[in-house]
Image (cartoon, rainbow, N blue to C red):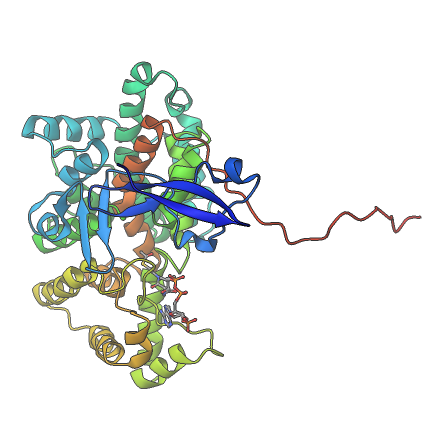
Length: 433
Ligand code: ACO
């Protein structure tokens, strides 16, 4: 017999079913609550206790520090997989055969041509514009240049299957071009087009770093590092930006429009923008003499708005498994590139102090994925204001996978309720009377 819970309101009992996931996670299904109780809803700001959907894409156990994409552990994927394989896995549910992988890559390459008018839009942005704002705008602009492909008819999915696939490969083909163009424009470099002979990650690096009038020499250390970073960022179940993509898509807005809103959600410093904020924080600690204790005290002082960026996570209350992998990778990449960055030492000192400080221990605050990633990006030659853009590049498969899942499951439009706390009715009195 299926489990249920009983809710007693003013002496009356209501039974609510329990939903159980494949990893034995349980949730009370309240979808009938309002109708059954004559108007009572639940309230949960920040959705700290609310599951917005059932999903078969990513499993994470924040208490045990477990993260799996479609059942495969993040540790194994980061060590052995190729980013495009992981993208295929997240979006379509299974690892690709070699033939499927090659076709996927070919289709992405074919869809990577960006309309020349997009270049004109890029040129119109002021030099000081933040790359995340540019990327979100250009992603939205893609809708205008590909109008017929953008809307997927969820009522008749069979008819829309090809259009959905075309959208997916376009996102994975065009957005890396937009990212690298954004970087090049900011640095006064002529725009570079992709090279169809290169792998997906290799091509991103070439489009970004090729110097004018010089042959491009591939650096395998950078390829390996970027491949790993992209995989580690590829999905993280119902985080702020993914929930945004799902909710925007739930109104049947197209994939480009939904992803553009996901990019905006990712930009904030409490989410993906933390990787930029961490580096800026570490820089200012260094410039202030490297006194980590002073900043630890500021982070704990409730009257000080300063937070230890890159620390804490809504769901990880043990450690973030991605941060463990990235910490090791940061050491490796800096060693391989022969970079001696004093900021890495400041980061390690902060982590050491935080891990033995009761404030952080009691609140279960550990380094998250953003704490060390910026140090690797910086060693790779990527400027600080591009860090969150690199995160967005990695998160594309996750956003696409969730958007697709939401549409295939024919989820209803996302529309939370509220408890109203404003004025009761009052008659209108004009200042003109
Ligand atoms: N530094 C100092 N104190 C912190 C920090 C921090 N980084 N993070 C949380 N706390 C404290 C809070 O002040 C609060 O203390 P209190 O109980 O005494 O009031 C307690 O820990 C719980 O924090 P909340 O903000 O309620 O936790 P929530 O789950 O809402 O927030 C978040 C999680 C946003 C990640 C938070 O830890 C934070 O702001 N961290 C810094 C920003 C950051 O690194 N974001 C990236 C997250 S990873 C990602 O999105 C890719």
